[in-house]
Image 1 (spheres, rainbow, N blue to C red):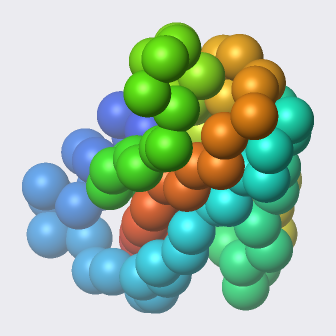
Image 2: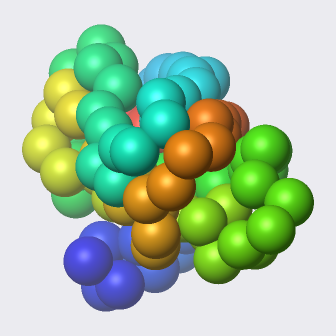
Length: 99
């Protein structure tokens, strides 16, 4: 995965053109640890997933408001929240695909 990201960034720095940019939000309901968002199909070898920010409602256990995200396949972004709890949360992302 790391090599794919660096390859896409190298392509962009060499004058590669952007093919598509997609923005989205992952939303966790109370008790959720894993959620997904569907995007328009991208070539995962030429796409970069960027984390744009996170908002949570847990004031007693901040660990429940931490997350990671992955471009799981050509059409899915998966978010994993480190802890579940009685709080809701959301995280924004951007998927940039290069030619």
